[in-house]
Length: 246
Length: 246
Image (cartoon, chains in turn yellow, red):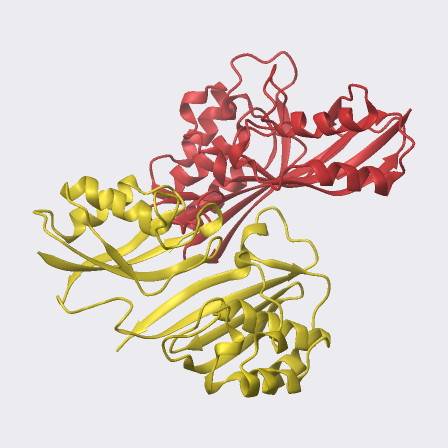
């Protein structure tokens, strides 16, 4: 039995997210596990650095799995890619330390959320969220300053109750206007709660159009109440960009 | 009865090309005509500036159609876009001169062909053609110089015989290395024969990797024999960028 670490990219448009759900094969986890089962003739469970929701993309999701096979790393890599659908692709695969766990060992992650001003082209539609006009970026930057740092992010999540700690650290939130029609927010943090990036991006957007204010952000932290935060933006604008390990 | 000019963009990945084929609705023309029929309760025939093959994309294909309706331009525009699938979208629609014909009046067109060095990401895979290494661009530019101008392009087409003139003028072929992994060829000409851009791009690519030479290009023009030209590249790298009218 060996442990393998892999990096995978996917266009999440057609999938019900990362995590296998009952019989539903239309998940990233389900697709990869199906192929590993075919390869090893044994059920294989894969772990991801975190779940991504339906419609969310990844440029470099990290996962791991344990299995026994007489194939070497590059043979496993080629085998899996050969059977993966065209919108999921392994970027790398190597044997790793038996103790490596892609979720438990992850130190931080970067997610991006991309806005498109006006109607996006048919070529971009699945990867951006369309908004009518450019929001006020300087206001959004003031809000970023409040969000950065270590806080209880429960109010910025879709969790009803939390059994585990909801304290997380956001190292940085960058706002980049890539061209006149494209605005990208990048969130680098040690972890994000359920729907948290979509709610943080929604809150920043609402601050940028004036329907939320800096005081609302303070209220979310003080009350931990979801109602003070902004809308949960749709999944298609969201991409898991990278996962860091020590 | 009025005549309407429209500009349409489409991701050609899922379609059998522009032109309606018998009962096959899975064409761009078929999709638009179906909606115009629903709108007017009459069959409506649309004309495109030219056919694009299965898998070929368009950022600004131009078309026109005649019909009778009590809707104004912006109502027709909204109606059609409302029913179009998400990978086809009208960019504009206006009433035009009754004599306007999108194919017969087109003066010139620009097509791009995009190469990706190495394996493209799952996000680009439908819009680029993957090649193993960057070809020799300076050699390709020498070949462009030979291809530009007015020639009989029969040997650079998939036409078996030609009933009409196969003489066309290529005003320019531009080669742009957009980033270390991306090479874009842009062809501006007064018209292109069947498969011509894909064969021209294939020939330029083969010159760039040394499997074709400038003498082969001269041989195609002299003999009009397809066998001296390069391969027909796959459709996914090809995009109709714009159509010009006087």
